[in-house]
Length: 119
Image (cartoon, rainbow, N blue to C red):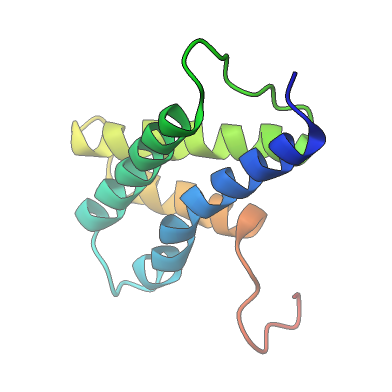
C-alpha cells in the first residue's frame, strides 16, 4: 500500500510535469509563441512524466491511486494536455483549441501574475 507520503510525492511529480506547460502558457496566449511549440511541450511533458513514473515504480507495482482531489485534478489535466497537444499535432484541432485548453489550465493551476488583483 502506498503511504500518504507516496501520494504527496506522486502529486508533486504531476505538478512538476505541468510546469513547462504552465511556464510557456502565458507567452503562447499573448501571441509570443506558436501552437506547434505549445503542443509539442504539452505532449512531451506527459511523456516525460509517464517515463519517470515507470522508472520510479518497482516492477509489478500498480500506479499509485489518486486519492486526493488535487491528484485527480492533476491526472485530468495531464490527460487533457496530452489529448489536446497530440490532437493538434495530428491536425484534428486548431491553435484556438490549444489556446482554450491552455487558458483553462492556467486558470486552474497557474500562479497569478505579479500585480494580478485576483491572485
